[in-house]
Amino acid sequence: MSVVERQEWDVVVVGAGGAGLRAAIEARERGARTAVICKSLFGKAHTVMAEGGIAAAMANANENDTWQVHFRDTMRGGKFLNQWRMAELHAQEAPDRVWELETWGALFDRTGDGRISQRNFGGHEYPRLAHVGDRTGLELIRTLQQKTVALQQEDFAATGDYESRLKVFQECTVTRVLKDGDRVSGVFGYERESGRFFVLEAPAVVIATGGIGKSFKVTSNSWEYTGDGHALALLAGAPLLNMEFVQFHPTGMVWPPSVKGILVTESVRGDGGVLRNSDGKRFMFDYIPDVFKEKYAETEDEADRWYEDPDHNRRPPELLPRDEVARAINTEVKEGRGSPHGGVFLDVSTRMPAEVIKRRLPSMYHQFKELADVDITAEAMEVGPTCHYVMGGIAVDSDSAAARGVPGLYAAGEVAGGMHGSNRLGGNSLSDLLVFGRRAGWHAAEYARGSAGARPAVDDAQVDAAAQEALRPFSVTGENPYTLHQELQRTMNDLVGIIRRQGEMEQALETLAELRARAARAGVEGHRQFNPGWHLALDLRNMLLVSECVARAALERTESRGGHTREDFPGMDRAWRRVNLLCALAGDAVALSRETTAPIRPDLLALFEKEELVKYLAEEELYA
Ligand code: FAD
Image 1 (spheres, rainbow, N blue to C red):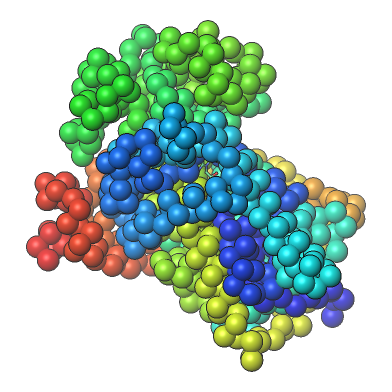
Image 2 (image 1 turned 30 degrees about the vertical axis):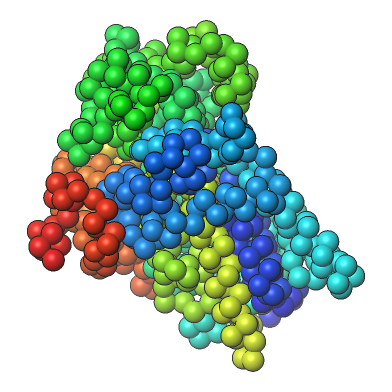
């Protein structure tokens, strides 16, 4: 049996991004002794990179905004596949979560009369994103860290130990959720620096590990996004929901190659930036789909007037939901109207004075200046689609964030599925992770309290098996983890990317099966002290599993909806709106099943015009 250090906690949160920290704060405030684990340094989570803002109907910039309008926009953006109860809770609770951040010390940009400023973003009817320049995620994480430290100081005053009730384990990777029968009993992981194994025993585990972007070659995501939480849940017996929906953000950098995929925030378009092709044409006017026709301007004049007078003009089509804009850019490039490096032009230089650009978009100004030697106050940026976000994720209960089928397991943030349907609106992730991070922490703490009399036991055999699994790369040879990763990224990018075809996805599944077999021989040299090759060899298991789920579900869904575009099935099919695709593990294999979505509550349906519902809902739903 392996000798592994063990500690006992009430709640363990895997991930210290926005979702994980918000969950941990809530669990600790509700009396649970809470441990947080993160792969990177504390505070370096992906949330830090969020630029544009947090979507919340606070009505600071337009008094007509309400949670109902936000709910409507979110459902439209997700093409009505959203888990509607999540979308409802999210729209209702997001403003409180933003105000709460302010009481914890967040310093948002202000309106002229001193309220939290809100900016426009794609798919949002009113200016709705609370922001801090284009560095909102940094302020969000800073605030949650500050709150964490404040709670630790309270604990020190009460117990003499800062970490008695809330402790962060940084630079540690969890590789397995442990179970006692059906229910969760803790997690197994390793310290990245020393390679030492550890077990945290707990009746409740919250997974908040973010997304999967590192399975794709061109991505805005950081090294941490290897789909670990998705895989941990699958391996623990919890299904993943609608994994075919991957968001390709329309505007990533395309040049130079070393920075390809890095995000160009949607705020650039929200603040007035326009997209042009190589003929200088604002091409988005040609790509307004029927379902959105009434809401978007038909001429440049009307679109430009909207920035000053949104109540009497329709929105510019550059602010259509991301899936629409990404597909439009893809078509322009494919048809030969792209920019020199394979993107299109995004221009603010002719739209705003240089000092306004530098004030409102400081990160973008520096990003282009330093990485591409482009001055965005004087010339257009070149941009193209980049893998950005996964809408699919762990299937959860809408109210409690409990993962389906595994008592004691919870999930929040990007790793959880359902909230965004087939396509996420910008700004809705930061609000999602605050709303459902809190809910996950709250319910995990209650569950842990309920288990206090009968804590689950950690099974030594599972710990042993987890240790053996983690050590395997040191005892096999024949394959290089870096080569396998590159092949995986190329496969997903080229064959299961922004535009999908049956034959290519079948080919991808064959390649993924081969890569999985080869990954069993992915060996590393050296020892366990900080060994990035070893870490990647372990992450490969997760990326391969999750990629297979994406490819299988994408092949199964024979329609185009939101982030999932089938060249062979270009239309949205109303019959598919009622279908969720679930991935689970049957032995080693990924098994796919279908379930019917829950009918949308009538009072929520009543928020939409009947003519609009006809575009989305199946006959039987309309009739009901
Ligand atoms: P993260 O913040 O990524 O945190 C994940 C945590 O899990 C990390 O601490 C990581 O170390 C840890 N982890 C992962 N695997 C393991 C493991 N095996 N063991 C232990 N720890 C693990 N959304 C918006 O709403 N508005 C925006 O303006 C916006 N801008 C964005 C800009 C960029 C450049 C990008 C890339 C995304 C943006 N998004 C935005 C999306 C949003 O930032 C993310 O969806 C969100 O931050 C995810 O938060 P999270 O808490 O779920 O995950």
